Amino acid sequence: MHANNEIGTIEPISELSKITKEKGVLLHTDAAMSVGNIPVDAAELDVDMLSMSAHKFYGPKGIGAIYVKKGVRIVPFIHGGIQEDGRRAGADNVPGIVGMGKAAEIAMEELSDRVKKITPLRDKLIKGLTEKIEYVQVNGHLTNRLPGNVNVCIEYIEGEAMLLFLNKEGVAASSGSTCTSKALKASHVLLAIGVSDAAAQGSLLFSLGRDTTEEDIDHVLTVLPPIVERLRAMSPIYNK
Ligand SMILES: *Cc1c(COP(=O)(O)O)cnc(C)c1O
Image (cartoon, rainbow, N blue to C red):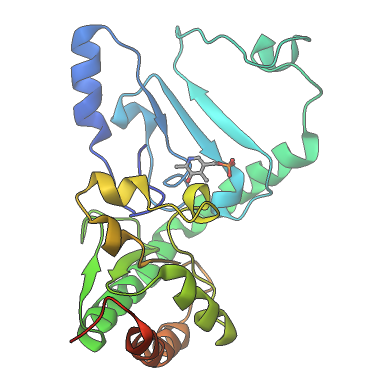
C-alpha cells in the first residue's frame, strides 16, 4: 500500500522499488488511499503498477484505474471481450469513467488547498484527544501520514460502544477498517504495529475530508471525553 487505509502512514514505496528492481521483481502499489489526497507520481515512486479508486477522491463508487508501466504485461482477471486493450472484459463503465476523470481533474486543482486545510485539523484533533483523554495512543506515523487520517486507541473500552454514542452526537467515525469492523476482530494492522489485542479493541478512526470544519473537530473534542468517561465507569477492565 502506498498509504495505509487504517493508520494513514505513508509507506516508502520508492525505497521498496529500488529493492524490487535490484531483484528483478515487479512492484504494484495499492494507492487507493493516497491518490487524490496527497501528490502521487508513479514515475517518482518508480513502480510498475499502481491502482486507485475513484470514491476515495469524491468520484463515484465502483470505478478505479490502474497505471501499468509501458512494457509491463498483466493478465486480466475478467476474461471475455477485448475491451480496454484486452485488460478488462465487459462493456466500459462510461458514467464511472467520466465521473472518475472529472473527480481527478478537480482533485488536481484542489489538492494543495485540501492538504493545507485538512492537515492542521488532523493535528488539532490528535492533540485534543491526547490532551483531553487519558490513556490514548495515536496509531501510525505522526507526520508522515495522510492529511485526513486520525487513528487512536482509547484504552479500557470498546470502539463499537464509542461509535454508538458518537453516532447519537452526529459524529460518523469507525473502529478499525471496513474489512475488520463488521467481524468485531482486532485490526490486523494495529496488531502488526505492536498494539495489544485489548487496546486494539478500542480503536477509533476519524476520516477528515474537504468538508470537515474546525467546528466539527471542536464538537468531537467536546462530546467524546464524557462518552469515554461514562464507558470507562462501566468497564470491567478499568479500575483507576
Ligand atoms: C478503499 C481501499 C480499497 C478498496 O477500494 P474500493 O474501490 O473501495 O473497492 C483498497 N485498498 C485501499 C488501500 C483502500 O483504501
